[in-house]
Image 1 (cartoon, helix red, strand yellow):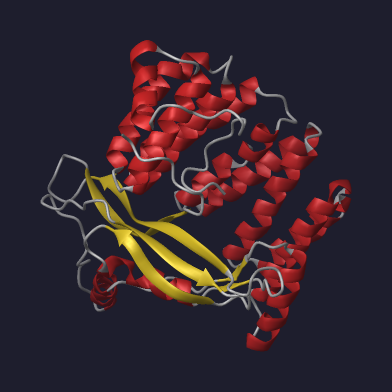
Image 2 (cartoon, rainbow, N blue to C red):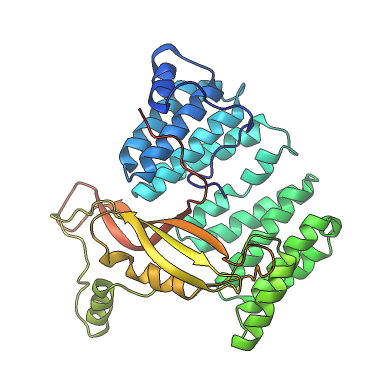
Length: 372
């Protein structure tokens, strides 16, 4: 998972050099450049803006780049699809769910229409529509989408895309509490010829261990964490995490509804929530436990992020004992308070309103150079 936007599906040996990001991006705007160079310069600058909490600026920057390059999708599908993917990610965190949905659909369409079936970018992007429904919290539609992708991929001989969609279905059903279906699906995946490939064999084994950990007690959890560490490589893998708790405001509204009162958090015409974000850093120790959890930076208010701090503290990762220097691994994750543009009570104008929960992004990738 890329550090900011899950987006750069382009050759890694082509980079923007010799100019600072703002100048390089401005050159593409003023005099034009190839879609690849435009995408790299724009996405890199948008990443800096996003990291600094300027979501709307990053969103506008990416929208303008799409306008410049979308007609080149047939000739340069990867850069244009990457722009849509970046645009979708920023829109999701900014709370613009309609734009997020449209951008994901465009990204997937470009990859399907202009790349061969076995292209890595098309395979990795094949489940993006299902991922979109999960982000929009429509889990039923996500299952339908993954199932359709899997069936179509199998029918057309796209074994890798089918396996990816199948593994997504396994974990989605487990997350929905349907352990029986998830195990049955996993059993079926392990019978496919592709499951004998060492890479997929390991991935399926890790998935089975993670499913087992969901029902394990502390003793069994410790054993599974050690076993998963032996199977999953050097990177710590999330095995189990507790649910997010409620903020004080959410708890008060829940209590009010329980006793017949109204929703204390219901949006009114005067409400408008600004973007709230925080970068949380933490260590994953070799035994899989988290330590030294701290807010590194973010928007001014911090009360909304307390449930996330507690949730990270309760996570369990796979063991990396003997695979590093003994310190473990350091992670930084961007948490954005989930929001949406809705019509509040007594208003005809959509406003950004916090809807509860978080949109989360892994920020382990080093940030791009700062703008000049």
